[in-house]
Each structure stands twice: as structure tokens, then as C-alpha cells.
Amino acid sequence: QVQLVESGGGLVQPGGSLRLSCTASGFTFSMYVMSWYRQAPGTERELVASLNTGSSTNYADSLKGRFTISRDDAKNTVYLQMNSLKPEDTAVYYCRADRQSFPRRIYWGVGTQVTVSS
Image (cartoon, rainbow, N blue to C red; front, side, top):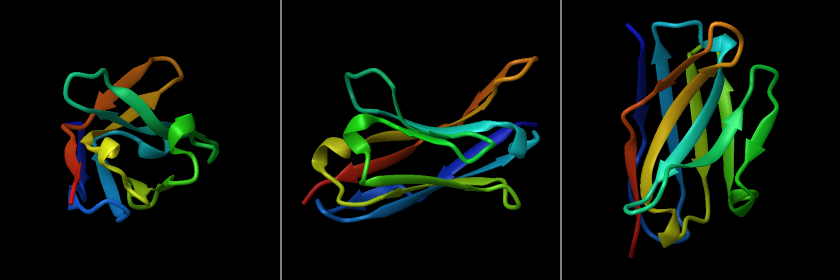
């Protein structure tokens, strides 16, 4: 059974930091591009960052320098380190696994809430 379980969300003050984790099971983690997306109320889900199997990263332009994605294939886990958080970073953060080779497989976690507020 495929599972992506996010953790690490919560309430943080502006300027603070959080580290999100997403632990996977049920598939060969190392073969998948891992990404973080987020969705704020009333908006579309947007890409935050992705990390492929070759350690190449991609970030939303507005988040470069504040957020860092990393993975530990031995632990089947992907991380998102978020620094200098702003109220506009408030959203539900989702983990996504994408096997881009045939057969294509995409899996999503259920999300973790991040709230940035004083």
C-alpha cells in the first residue's frame, strides 16, 4: 500500500523556521522525483520545490533562498526546510512522488498545515 505521510507542520511566528518531512512507503522511493506543493485557501495548488533522483532541484522563483528541499533515500524521506517564514507562506503543504518513466505513477500525501502568524 502506497503511503506518503507528511509531518512537521504547525504554527510559527513570522521570521521563524519549520522543517517538513514526508516519509514514503509502498514504492521504490529512489526512483521517484519528490516534490513539495502548497495550497492556500482560495488558490490553486502550486509547486514549492522538487528534487529528482539525480539531486537536481527546482524551486518556485519566489521561494529561492528561503526554502531548501532534500531527500534521504535510505530513510525514504524528503524534507523541506523553510526559513524566514512569512504570513503568505501559510498553506497546506503536500508531498508528491512522481515516477516519470513508464509506467507513470504519481502519488500525493494528505498534507500538513503550516500557519505563519504572530
